[in-house]
Picture 1 (cartoon, rainbow, N blue to C red):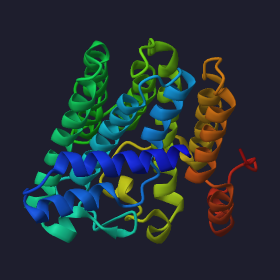
Picture 2: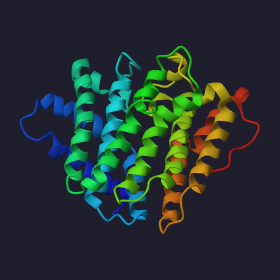
Picture 3: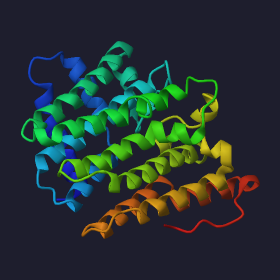
Length: 304
């Protein structure tokens, strides 16, 4: 079974169990719309891949940890799309939750997914209480203050923000939680796996900055040009497109080289490289620079 298939199956199982019977049907539909919308599932895949490298002796706990982190991620997207933040009409090529179901239901759906994440992890962790506290702390670190998703989104509300700190909080923190959760679910120390999450998470945010400039709404599945519109910190604005692409390539190389020695090292490196090409395809970059020669880079980007 592929990591993606495992992640999707775990999400379906845990979502249905946590939603239960008798909940408000439109709220459940809004939450399902947020979660099952064709995401890449890279965070749960990373968690599961690291767990595999660590022996994966408690696969149900690994699955729950992976699902909980993905639910937190989906919740953050629901809130990020709302009029108070990005006011986005589309996400992954579909109407955002507040457009499809109303703003009140979107707010409740995001809140509901956060609570569901804790419930999923708590229920699975009851079988391994010796590992549960560390997993809970790891998840809250990736989501809360001072450097989790909440802080990352809050930096957008400040008059100024350090670009690296913003990127590490908004995107990188949950990637670190994902790789660390894979180790923690198996009873391993998480520290050796934190750099992989940190480098890949920062690369994801840099890629998002690049794509916001060079891709159109149809390619992105959401509105383009949002960083300039909302005056958000952006690698593409701070470094220029060529500089941002070079920074992205460097982060990907650092992510691949940071993977600890293990039997799954090649598999993890392949996962990193495949994600790099999916995030910032060479063809997309070349196509943009061909139609915008004034901003063409001084070098030709090599494929990963």
